[in-house]
Image (cartoon, rainbow, N blue to C red; front, side):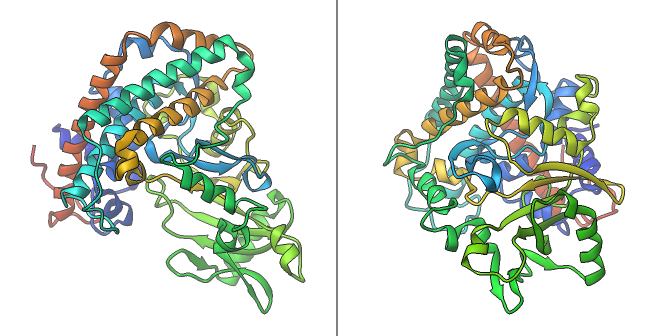
Length: 451
């Protein structure tokens, strides 16, 4: 089997068909290697299982813990703790769909690789190799030395965070709660604070405000066909009947959510508007929130690593909720799982002030080149180390082993991630060629591979 056939086989296993221009997910993955990497986490784990990607021995020495599973540059951001029930804005991992009990080295290596791919994306935008909605031709971009500096900074700060936890165990209950004015992500942090409940833009720019409006019948989801699809009456009643017991207030409206994310672009997802019953006014608006009900599939690592821990035998939605509760300092207050129509669903509140980070946010511009990319990598390292350490709050064994094993192998970690990023770029090129081939349609055999 060629490399191309290997990659396409694992893409087909998750997406149901070979690379196809008729698949929205695949078109999104074709934008650039970073987007391809986001949408094909299973290939990373297939490579680990097949021995195509070999972890440095220092990572193998770390004990099992809860891991993000799909750890990359854009799966961190500013969120409000306790979901839509809290007001404290923190910087933390924000996507746990592939969370499970596994090796911290998976998250570390996957994130390091994503730093290299994020830098490549910025350089590709500058050189017009990759498209972008904004004109960034005049902005400076991070160079190879700055990318490797950010990768090294991530490793160093991950180790330093674990050392601090060994010396001061109560720090496990800390989080990144503020950003210095004038730094690369100060605007993102300020935006999140303004959109949090009680913030100056809560009623106009929060996730809640941008999704609903006041109709003649009360508050309703905006009927944006590109984002929300109204449900047929019988379907609405079925979904309401199935999931209303999990809500913490009245169900006001339900819609289907379209085209969210990359890795889970093709799974069923519904949004519930939850809050006080009619009549609705400014006060009832402030008490409303959005709850997402999303079909959950198996975490990406678990098809390839089946016997790591008994907890991984939990159904996918239950496992995600359990790992998220462990890894977050103050997890969502509405976080549950349900089985409906032969599928497992994850139920979670949507943060009012969820502000994500795109790779171009930290790789383009004077602040990124002036140390902002390195600083961002260090924030992610601190947030990830805290999340990993919380997998076992009864001891500091994990933190001790990180402090013992990782120093001295930084160069090996960086080299392994850099080389794997080059492999992802090659896989991406083959993927794009496959999309252009005549046979690239659902149900057809995979197009012939170039190598």
